[in-house]
Image (cartoon, rainbow, N blue to C red; front, side, top):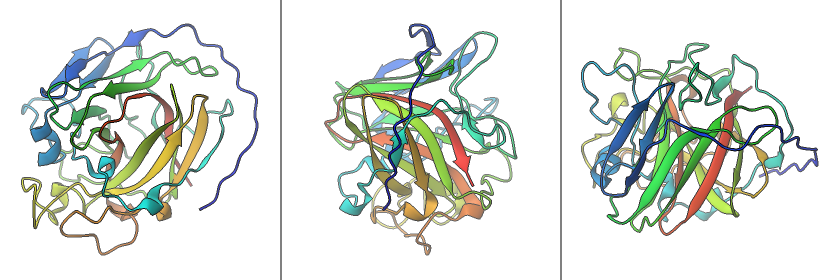
Amino acid sequence: MWVVVALVGLAACAPEPASRAVATDGGGGASDEDAAGGRGGGAGSGADARQGLDLNLAPDAPDDRGGGPADAARPDLPSDLNVDMWVAAPCISPDPMDLLSDFGVTIAGGELAVKMVNGRSRTFWASSGDGTATATSTLRAEMPNRCSSLYAMHFSGSGYTNWGVVANAPFVLQSGTNKFYDGTVYTGIRFFAKAAVKTRMTVSIGDKYTVGAGNYCNVATDAGAGRCGDHFSMGVDLLPDWQMYTVRFDQLKQGGWGVPQSPNLRPDQAFLWGMQISFGRNVTFDAWIDDISFVK
């Protein structure tokens, strides 16, 4: 584990937050809502989350999203995942070719999309919850008040008492023949984030061994052999001020509950599925995530 702390001034120059692509939902019902210029996902049902990463979109659906299991949000993750890799957030922008999501801008505002560059598809972030009837969450693109950034992901919620809630996005369309992304030129993921109060968030990367499309686990099986969703993960602490987090692939570990376990100690970078963020049970969270990118 290594930690680098750099005190860098942060310019706040965006206007007050304004919502785009808003969807809200209780923990017991699935919701995906298209809006002009963006797409937001409320927390889906426990069935969606526990059954795997495919939300069974209509055949003519123009994009793919994951709704995956609560892998990293579960309390049975080993404690050595609880490490932080952050520096005080400078006003820098990722290389456009490495950018995954900057959450805007379309002609109508921000959107919860993955950038269609460098072999990646235009897919969308969506969320799924654990089915707690009284739980609520929102996932939307809003103005973040960070440097010159126009939009960021704003993910907030509370009341989940089973395993928690996730938001994820595949790197390539899941309706095509090739469902995985070759990320062998990269060493990890970088993003900017903050939370209203110090909050633990889990960052996960899925690969061919942790999703049903890889044919190693069975997405329809929740217990015993064939349990999908045990992605490679680590926990980071979000702080009230913007920080830049760098998560290397060689730091990520599986939780150990998926069957079968990957034969590798890190994600198979030649067959990456996508990225997931999650918050555990009994956690009230109000998090902002911006400028997610690969790093070399």
